[in-house]
Image (cartoon, protein in one colour):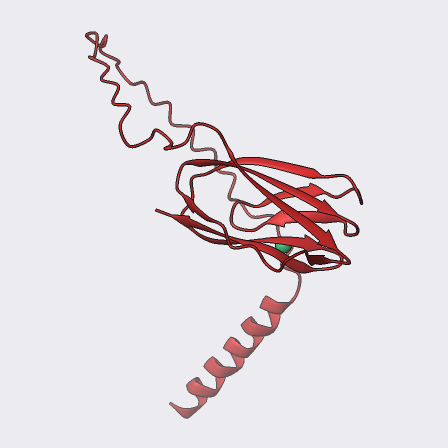
Length: 149
Ligand SMILES: [Cu+2]
């Protein structure tokens, strides 16, 4: 009984050691499961397309422009905290004297900076939450967009 236990432990230790080795064995994952789904499409009997222009219409058709001037890596006048409504059209304009790029977190929009030349970031804020607009290299928070749902 005791001997069997010892052997079992030794075996598992061996198995473990083998695991750490080359894991580069080609996985046979590529088992082609090509299931051709033949969907019998019944001819759609002219579905009534109801277009409700209600909630999705932005309250303001022209974009809200947010201008940020960066002096020596810092936003002039401090970090801006614009409050926006979901679906609003926004244009972020960043004029920086230094830095490599501006990065709007959450939306993950990144644009290169040319010192002295304004960078325009047009977008529709369709994601609610709080999002930092950062300057990178040097890193600094320029604005925090608050998008109301
Ligand atoms: Cu960033």
